[in-house]
Amino acid sequence: MSYLNWKGLTSLSHEAPAQNVSAAVQAAGTGAPSRTVLNLELGPTRLGELIQELEDVFQKDGSELRIALPERWLLFWKLRSEGNRILLAHPNPDEWVATCALEKESGEKVLLSLKNSPQGQSLSLGQLVRVQSVSNLEIVLVFKSSD
Image: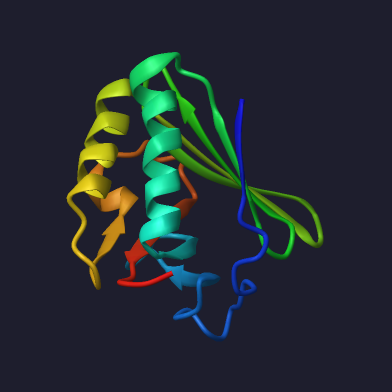
């Protein structure tokens, strides 16, 4: 399993989504349940790290990637054989575990989008790839011009 330690990013915040890493609960749409949104702002260095590690997950041996984030958040990226899922677990009151499990084709699509991401833009995974209805999390990657 590959590992990135991004605990040093600006803290998670429900009030300030424009920071490096933030989480906020927002409505998923009329009649739909609330969905947690994990926002990650990535400068060129972290974006490069993410691309390199996700290439290992989705294009090479299919290992998983674990990313440690501030305030006891963990984000796992995994290769899945059937159906895309983006899930959030809350095993303890101060611990959050997010899993982005994608089929190979979807993982490669995310990689291509990351490699072609213009600075100042964002990428919403749930809009890029179709996720199964059991998914309860949206991950938004925001691309910054500097680290």
